[in-house]
Amino acid sequence: MEPIVFECESKVFRATKKSLSLRTTIPEDIVQFLKLQAGSKVKWIAYIREGTVTVIIKKKTES
Image (cartoon, rainbow, N blue to C red; front, side, top):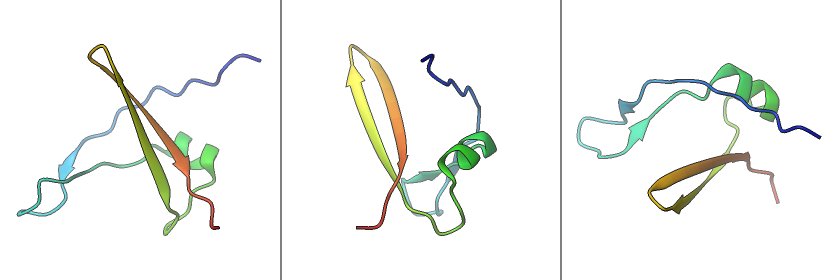
């Protein structure tokens, strides 16, 4: 089975004036694929290897 690849761009904004955190929008294709809704929780996983960062976003399931 071939992997599904989404290539999207989104702009990053400062979360608040005093915060170092940043915000971005989850692209619509990803929202639909993960079946996200307002209020959904997501889990971010970052793999860093040899100067390359790969980020995985997963819909957090209630447990």
